[in-house]
Image (spheres, rainbow over the protein chains, first blue to last red):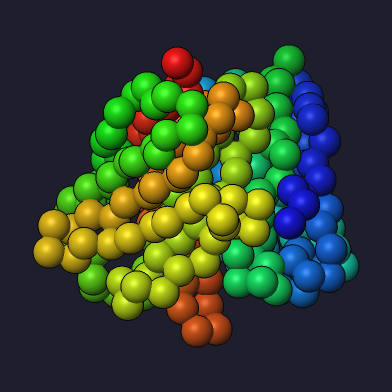
Length: 110
Length: 123
């Protein structure tokens, strides 16, 4: 299975909004609403930020939102804060009953 | 609060078998609708899903690793384990264990993770 496609890096200034895309195929992202997003600060465990395309777990800021159109899912972070600087990964269930991650996107808060 | 902790050798020789165990605390590994997964991250690279096990013993593996991977569960010890055979330097990575919440018709994702353990493959 091929990794989902994410931009290698995105950046934004505090207070701005950014969007990270995650492109797959009809066998994963496009075929199921089981897309999740993870925030990963180096040296720490990844943290679930979004599940089922657009749902936030309890305790996750409402500045984080998710959506999907066709084979592409997106994570939007509004009101950027310095603590949002991290790596972000998307993940999707696949038609083979496996999971696949995106390559990861490094978010820099300028 | 569920907690996961990986344990195992930090150094493995090429061609040997990498063995890791994940101990789950704060809840029974058998309760609820959860899968128990292994994920790894080579230095400077992204996350790679290795595979999962359900407490019934059913498993799913990454096709690229399937021929070398075995995941097992020991409900009496509240643990699950990873074995990766015939390792090479390319298997050097931080290995994470994680709980995956989901069932028939619903899915949440990897909601609890261990802190990760670095495994280096070198002679």
